[in-house]
Amino acid sequence: MSKHLIALDLDGTLLSDDKVIRSKTKGTLHQAMERGHIVVIATGRPHRASIQYYNELGLNTPMVNMNGALVHHPKDKNWDVVHSPMSIRTAKSIIQTSYDFNVQNVMAEIRDHVYLDKHDDEIMQIFHADFENYPVTVGNLKNTLNEDPTSILISPKEHHITQLRKHLDDNHASVIDHRNWGAPWHIIEIVRSGLSKAVGLKKIAHYYNIPKERIIAFGDEDNDFEMIDYAGIGVAMGNGIDELKTIANYTTKSNEQEGIALFLEEFLKTVK
Image 1 (cartoon, one colour):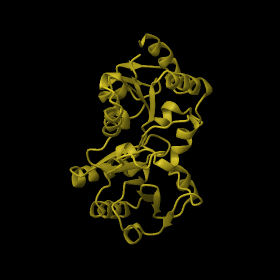
Image 2 (cartoon, rainbow, N blue to C red):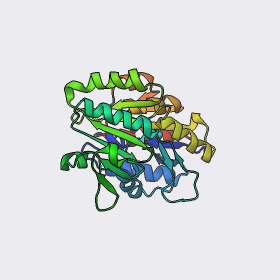
Image 3 (tube, rainbow, N blue to C red):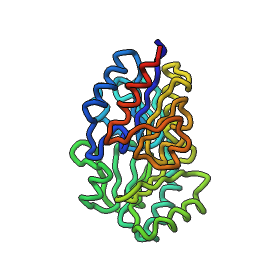
Image 4 (spheres, rainbow, N blue to C red):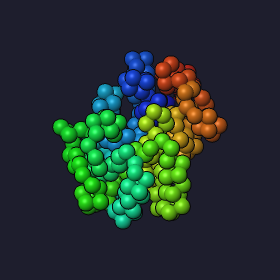
C-alpha cells in the first residue's frame, strides 16, 4: 500500500464550528493511521492553541504552526525545528503603524510567549493567550518586545482594515506576508515573507519521503492556498472560500458535515 501524507487545517476544516473534532472524523483518521498513512496538522494557530487537538488524535508527527513560521515535532526534541521570525526592526515599525491607526489591540508572539499591548479578556480568548500555562507579557510592545517575533496579530477597527493592509503592502511587502481572518474577528495576521503552510508541509513530506502526488491536504481559507496548490491531492472544504475551491483538485462537504471523513472514506478505498 502507498503511504499518503494527510495534512489538516484546523479551524473550519478539522474542527466543527464549536471547535471540536467530531467522532466520525476522528474514527476515519485513526483508521487511516492504522493503515500506515501519516496525519499532520498544518494551522495558522500557534502551538499552544493546537496541541490539544494533536494529542486528541494521538499524533506522533511534526506540526506546522503559524502558517509555516514554526515547524516542529511536539514529541521529538531532536527533530530539526524550523523557526522563521521577522526582524524586530520590521516588527516595531508595524507596531508603530498599529498605534497610528489606533487599533483595538496588537499582539506579538515569540513561539508560545505572548506579548499583548493591552489586557483584554475577549482578545486574550481570541488569541488563545493563556496566563496559566504559557508566558504572557502585557504592556506597550515598543518597550516589552526585545526579540524577533514569530508573528504579529492586529485587531483593527473594521473600517481601517483595507487602509491598514494597503499600508502594510506599500511599506513592508518585501519582508512580510499578511492575512485577514474572517468575521467576526477581522484579525490581521503577519509573518515573515515567503512563509506558508506549504513550506512546512514540504519539509515534513521530505522527512517521510512522501512525493507530492501522495499528499492529501484539506483547507478552507486563504492561508491554505499554497498548501492546497502544492499537494497532489488538494481538497477544499464545502464551507471554504470560492477562490480556494477553484485551485483545489476536489471539494468535499463542509466541516459541519465532516467532509474530511467523507472524502477519506472514498479516496482511501482506491489506495493500493
